[in-house]
Image (tube, rainbow, N blue to C red; front, side, top):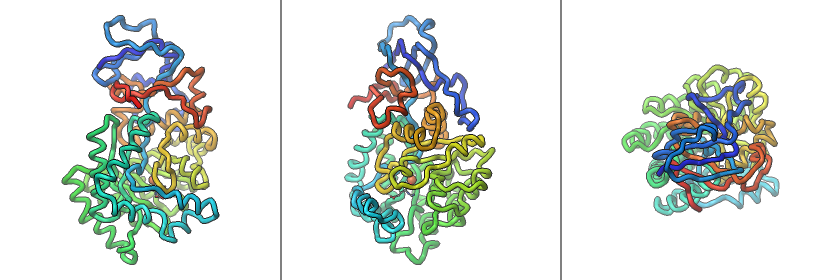
Length: 412
Ligand code: NIG
Ligand code: FE
């Protein structure tokens, strides 16, 4: 269906020419057109510009006086396929236990894995689709979803098949990541290398055969997987055509950022603990740093030093990390707001990080992330607001009136 939006108060994130991503030096500018029109044809953005040049054509027209349009959020890091929740661990943390202590007591990733292993594929799909529908209403138009709560061949594949089914059944753009190396399961407690070998020799070939993943990921962290393990996994993924995305420098810096860059990882995510050398290694590379401020908020750990990274010229993307342990929320508007409040990113930087740079971090920059002719008409229509600064300012409130995927309004 074709739609003409007219009298848009401000059309945000205009990119006339294709850009891959924005560096720290470019992120401070957010191109917009005031009093604009936007034409959608066959699910794609086909034209936009100043209202004075609005075409006089016979299509369904929506007058959005007083409201703004921006591209949907691009959430490049989620684990939204999971079974059950972990609110008991949340209460344990309030009472003083740390994330590490909880994990050592049988909680954490292994707790989620146990629940997921006992959940049927159908039940897992039904639980996950509720979260997907929820984030669509919150303005997300492209999302990456990881496995990593299976930790056996059967359950990792179950997760990836659920992601594939979500991809087939929903209009949102979805990318899948194989995160078998999320934690070492009990059965391999004293045989981590055997577990990694199983992921590589046993699961990767099936993933390729069934076309179940776009990327490969690993939790590079003290007590989980080392920098050497990270190299092994990323190199193996590459052989199967899977670009790397790493969980790295969340609690400790153990050299994973360098391994990521050396293996041409698409993104390095978390980065709460950044040494100067980690920042320097990322300069002039194609690897996108991704900050997950909702995780810092929820676990009360440091925020990624976004100001320092952007000021040194590095690009940055923002994502939710939606998962049951460290960020049980897929709300990108909250992430954008938190990035401004806690990481001192400007609204321009935060919106760029949550759209075009997020799209790059999941290799979707040709389809989504900006108002560019030919891209998917995945759009957020705001309520009546005075300036786009209101979006991060009005934290926790609903500034979104409607969402569109491929030009179609997604009804609640
Ligand atoms: O990105 N850091 C590792 N993985 C997830 C959390 C996993 C969990 O606690 O279930 C994250 O924060
Ligand atoms: Fe994560």
